[in-house]
Length: 129
Ligand SMILES: [Cu+2]
Image 1 (cartoon, rainbow, N blue to C red):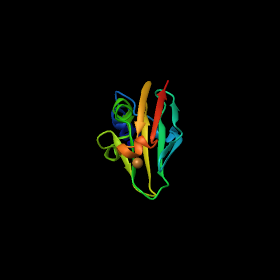
Image 2 (tube, rainbow, N blue to C red):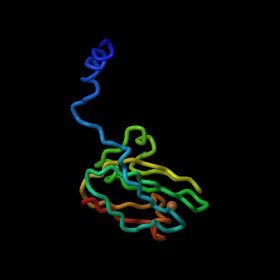
Image 3 (cartoon, rainbow, N blue to C red):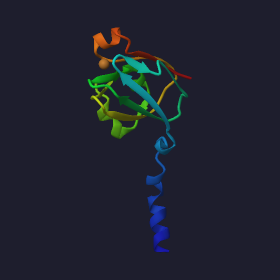
Image 4 (cartoon, rainbow, N blue to C red):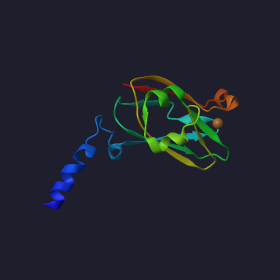
């Protein structure tokens, strides 16, 4: 009885006005950053579906995944927000960064923030439908 009353008192806390995304359902999606390429170059997501975006840098130099409009329009998991700085995610040599995001419909550009790397081919498109 006591535990029943206790669980009743917790109900309002368990049902927030706007449901948080269920991050456990996030589909995994790998993006490979290399010198000087982003693969795949065409990235497709479904609007409103959580995605576990895994940014893998398999090169020996630092790269970044810069997609400011994509990150700002979508809902980034709170604990991952610190990884997105100025619309980009830095990924050191040999490192991997995971960002969970619920993307918003739209077309976005993505690139390495390093201008030379971008000119050499480090750009991609993100289409969310
Ligand atoms: Cu780069």
